[in-house]
Length: 336
Image 1 (cartoon, rainbow, N blue to C red):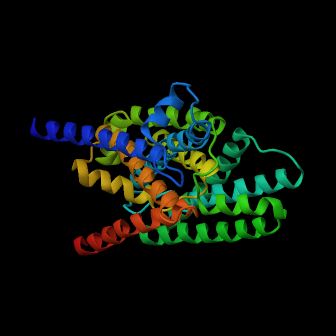
Image 2 (spheres, one colour; image 1 turned 180 degrees about the vertical axis):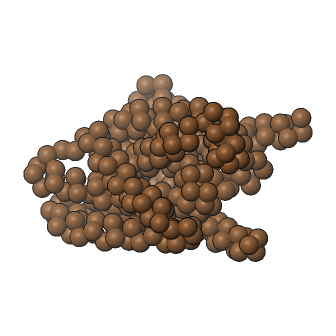
């Protein structure tokens, strides 16, 4: 009962913090908006046209997108850590985000150089193809390598190779497109629209729901493959599901916001520290909330720390997330 009460309090506290940070992201920026301006804009009373446009066309879709993509990236990191049984596995470290980044960059350059527009579906499909290609390479290496540290190093090397090729691709883009491509390739939530938000929600929300429905087999899998088999879990099918779901979530994030570092690694561990449990049925929704909170804080800092200049989101997430990863490595070294 005590544990259940503590988890309920933690959920309520995180939900309250999420609402507060979401509101702060709407109020705070290079142009401050008052509660009256926001209330009037949400009611359709355009007494202040500038405030209404800033809220409805810029900050609101961006804040909702940050919540969705931050949660998606965190859940993807949780799935990869479960799949590889490695505490520092994540979409960025394993090279999956970089593979998606390369595929999207190639698609964008080809389309833009021909004067064509890239739709949300095209970007998602390209990102998914790149993410799957990187994931398949990592899985091929995993079959030959027993040590997880070497597997992580291989993932990092894949990331460097894909990033290098992406830089070459961006260098050959037309001058008018280089700025947008460069900002996207560094990770950014700027430029989000209601159209991209709708496309992202159609992918991320059903995928996260599917992940939550896998809570029971995930719990059995964490206790060992033999136990999972005895509980009726199809190990091969389950592993394929983990790969596909994590790749879809990573691809969706990369397609719209570019590669974002450390969120997929740090957030699942922060969640475990808060809730003090390994039960997937608790951790999956908690990771969703924590990822949203982490990215809302990071995006707020990126927008306002040096306003009107905006930092890339990966700059902030690296500063906040890297210490968590260092702490994990030190802790693992002490326990070994």
